[in-house]
Amino acid sequence: MFDHDIIIIGSGVSGLSCAKILNDNNKKFVLYESQPEVGGRMSTDFVGEHKLDRGFQVFIKGYPLYDDVSDVDQLSLHSFLPGALIRLNNRFYKVVDPFRNIIEGFKSVFTPIGSLLDKLKILKLRISLLLKPSGNLTNNISTYNYLKNNGFSEEMINNFFVPFFGSVLLDKDLSTVKSTFETVYKAMSSDNICLPENGIVDFPKSIYNQLPKDQFCFSTEVTAIDNHVVTFADGTSTSSKSIVIATDATTASNLTQSFKAPLYCGTTCLYFVTSRQLIKEPMIITNAGEGFINTICCLTNVNHSYSSQNLISVNVNKIIPDITHDEIVDSIKLELQSWFPEVDFDFIKLYEIPNALPKHTPSEFNRMRNIPQGENGVYFCGDYLYGASVNDAIKSGLETAEIILSLD
Ligand SMILES: Cc1cc2nc3c(=O)[nH]c(=O)nc-3n(C[C@H](O)[C@H](O)[C@H](O)COP(=O)(O)OP(=O)(O)OC[C@H]3O[C@@H](n4cnc5c(N)ncnc54)[C@H](O)[C@@H]3O)c2cc1C
Image (cartoon, protein in one colour):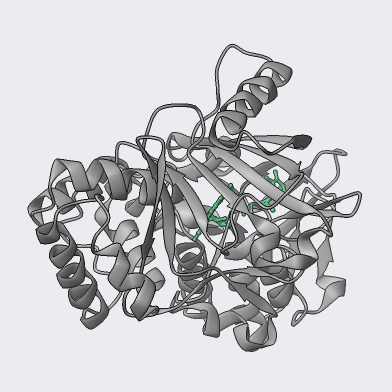
């Protein structure tokens, strides 16, 4: 006899999605989470009057799976202008989606970001993705090869796809599988990208709020799993027929030794308050040139509730080696001042996130798809099983719940 039928470890989006489906089907679970609250990698800190997401992250409203676990219409969402402000050769070029902002989109045709042929190919790619069903995992080549196969020029890849999607995927080589790129690009083409009212954590909280609170144990770290027995950091243990490990891949690998964890892409995010607005529009600024900075987001241009001041995040798509945090802040400030000489920048906080996204090259992706499920009652769940996105974290949670439901 076991103490529980189902234990879930981890209350990120994948664990919560799994819990939601089990609960909808009258299956009782107990969830253990090492942190004091839900969210995992979708978390927000409240620092003074500022809301700081733990790493710059956007809510991509067009993902198809939200409705399976939450009512997105109940979230108060603030939209970005669809497109980006790209910095190239010391100038800013506005590239806007012509389908959702005809005037600004038409002007984008005349920017030097890619040739006219490249822009027509973007149109073709966009239409073909919108017509295609989501989640095609066949022939899962790298995003770079996929873009080359679709005929994009090297210039377009370097000046548009690398600064924009390289920052979303945290992968400037675009070695990530094309299925993740397709999921993200299709979702961004079909709806807005947004910031929720109270930070990115609003989304995982919206799932948690539908679940029985007495089945959650926070600040409870699992340190070992052996033959249906789960052991905690304080030395106590419990047992369960089924154990869903919904942690990051590295923890899942350490707890079970049943697969080798993938490498992760890291990111560094710095928050500053600025003495004036950097730009007027609610847009992401991406850098197609030299320097540390990959993107800047003027958060309060999009959502005033992030701060009463001009709050920005400055994002570097890697962990910067061999220099102190103070040196990173100084270097970024210098770079910012060279871009915006009239503006003062007050540093607020720096986040280094080494395990931001699993690095899904085609071979790593195939390896993750073949991790065995159900051995000794252990099931894995997490974005690393499908792709580096919130949609894939939900997909994995739904799939694991279906496997457990099918055991009856
Ligand atoms: C900076 C950043 C930017 C991102 N940007 C985007 C984006 O724009 N769009 C997008 O789609 N995706 C983005 N992502 C990815 C997205 O956030 C993740 O894919 C998703 O949140 C992963 O959810 P998960 O449940 O798989 O894992 P996690 O969120 O990592 O959840 C794992 C949970 O397990 C808990 N845990 C770990 N070890 C233990 C233990 N031993 N015992 C108990 N609990 C444990 C953790 O505390 C955590 O709560 C971004 C991620 C980061 C970090």
